[in-house]
Amino acid sequence: MAIEIVSLMHAGVRVGHSPEEIAKAKEFYGGILGLETDSQRPHIASIPGFWSNVRAGDRSQQVHVMGADGTSAAARSSTEDPTRSHLAFSVADLDAAKVTLEQSQVQFWIYESLVGDGSYQLFFEDPFGNMIELQQATA
Image (cartoon, rainbow, N blue to C red; front, side):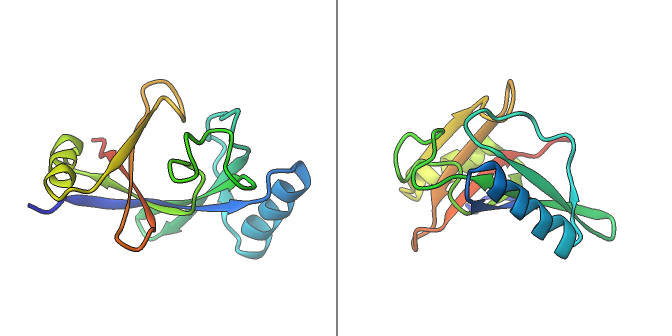
């Protein structure tokens, strides 16, 4: 059974972690690409950066710009690092998605409360090493 994807939530990209590099990234994504910075991004002590809103008609996605060099302070290992470039999707049923991944023998890892109390993110890699994040769709 396939995972039921509801929407693309965000694409995560990495930039340098210094204040100067974060400012340079903000100028690029905001000034050159014209994306609005999301003022609601929670403070993530181990991951400097910002979220940029991408509006297309009645849909809204984001680019999560994360400051990290090498393995980030939020990482459990070089693989289990939430700052790696990735695509994030909301799914209709996160528990069913876990079952599908388990049945397909796809290893995954979970971060809880990384981006705020109660946040729950499931990560895994496609067969080519690209990281994918899943979150439960909200009403």
